[in-house]
Every structure is written in C-alpha cells, then in structure tokens.
Image (cartoon, rainbow, N blue to C red; front, side, top):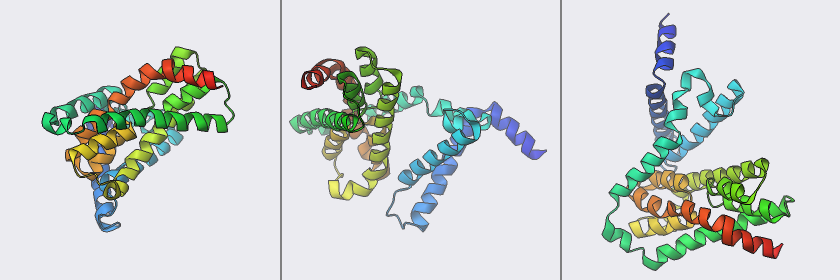
Length: 254
C-alpha cells in the first residue's frame, strides 16, 4: 500500500522525482568517489557514467528511445534533462563571468576556438571516409557532428543529407561530449586547468558545451562559466561554416 502511494506521488510529481533521483545519484557518486577511488575520480564523472547506465537500462526496459524518461515513474527526467533547462543553465553560467578575467583569453582564446572547430571537423570527415562514406554531403554532415551534436543535423539539413547520416552526426557529437565529460577531471592536472584563462582555452579546443561544463564542474566549478562561455560559440560558428565554407572545401577535395 505504501509503495503504491509513493509510486502515484512520483508519477504525479515527475519533475520533483527527477530532482530526487539526480540527488541520490550524486550522493552515491560522492560516496563511491571517496570510498573506492579515494578522491582520484571526481564524483561528477562517476555520476555521468551512472546516468548513462540508467539511460541504457531504462531504454531496454521500455523499448523506447528516451532512456529512463520513457518509464512513467521517471518521466520528469525528460523535462529536467531537456533543451529548456540545459539552455537556461548555460545562459546562467555567463552571469558568473568576470569581464576582466574573460579579456585575458585574448587571441589565444580566439585561436583555440578556431582550432576547436576545424580539427574535430577534420577528424569527423576522416572517420566518415574510413567507414565508407565518400560523398561530400555525408562527410560534411558527420564532420560537422564532431564539432557539436547540434551543428551536425543543422548542417545536414542545409545541404540535403539523409536522415540516417544526420543521426550518425548526432551520435558523433554525443560520443565526443561524453569523452570530454569523463576525461576532463582525469586530465585536469596535466592540462593545468586552474585559471579562468586556461578554462577558456580548454573550452575553445573541446568545443562541446555540455561536455566542457560537466567536465569542469567535476574539476573546479568556478571554472565552468569561463569554459562554457567560449564553448558556446562553437554552435554558432559551426552552423555558419558547416554548410558553407567547410562543405565547399570537402566538395572541392572529393
């Protein structure tokens, strides 16, 4: 009887349930970080892996495409992890940026932003070529997905890519974001992510807002606004260059 009451309350208050689930995951991740890794692996990175595992289990149980959110009990997770709150969180980080610190990035930040846009695109195009895609449209779309998972479908839609290629471009961007999320806390010491300037350069090179934000949050949350500030520009730049200059270059080469 008690379980039925709790289940009904959870279903009727999905958003609150989502916050409770995330809170429990963060609590468990913190315990695992302290007790099993002795602080060497940040709790946020562990939470990301647990979240991915839960999404996989939820997708298998429901047979749907939204992971845990396809289960009625956890439907609020879909809203909590949706575009609205994600974009709100990204915009909110900008209010913590100190202008004087942001200016210190200078030309280094701009160069990092350019490299972070072009280099992932080249890698994405190379991977598309290796897996048998030889036409300029498919190669450009998958390459654009390596910039961010938003740039891929935007570019593909503009140049006439098929739906399966656009899906691959999204998957490419998601994999990149996950890699950045998980590897940032581990590589933070090597990359010397200690100052706002270093965070901005890192954000420019990494290029994925979600990956950079989560990775820096697991490293030093004070650096999140600076990394996200520069990484945010990747979507705009990618959407401008993907269906135009980058596509023309790939078409000329192929």
